[in-house]
Image 1 (cartoon, one colour):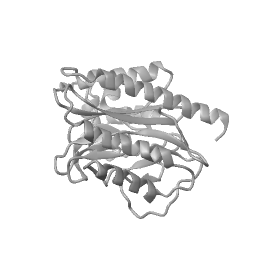
Image 2 (cartoon, one colour):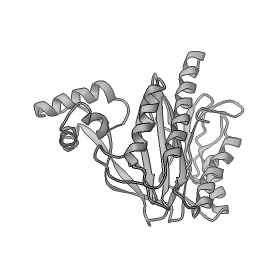
Image 3 (cartoon, helix red, strand yellow):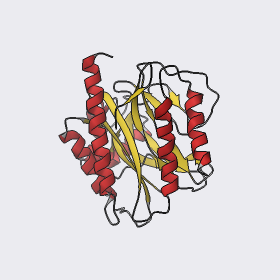
Length: 296
């Protein structure tokens, strides 16, 4: 990675980390999910970045893939366990980072600490050549020691320009993989701790979408929307909120594009037994002897 490339990754990581703190600081009883998501994304854009993916606000047993719609009425309630997962991009370089906060109470501080400590333990040992199973084992043992389980079917991931999930999956348990992380790899590591059984299941469609392909026989207004998506969001996920700013009937049109398999809708992911979930995440540049935390 040359100096110009590194500057993009560092800038994206810095914007994402500040956006994460902004969002987490706004999570209070009575505040609307929508208010937080829009403030975070506005901050990213004003800071000179792009929104790498819609701000995830996953509450309680929801682990991932929830972002509010334009007309979302949900507000935080006392005792909610809230994951704020933020992504910023600069020239395709992505900073992906998350934190968990509790609304008003202190019931799940140990669960949050299990996720936080697992990531901190990985940070101490990650380097070029470390195997995926070693990282997963550290996460798993750290959480088990504190009395919790990792979510085994959610993983961290390597990142390349305009590619959030670039092929390498970083497990949260010892999966016996001998695959090693190479020096120079950018990777997001995100331990999910839970009070439940340790798996997520796919629920109903979320408000997070990804462009797939053009299809024949689309209606004129569907095609116009798809062309806009392809032009602006062909390589990174987007939300209904970004569509309805330009298309008054964007939500309905999106549903049609999903049915036509031109656009993919991510499912909301919930812990399979209803267990509470905490998440901590940073993006790292892996070096020969350690790492550089890009989203500190």
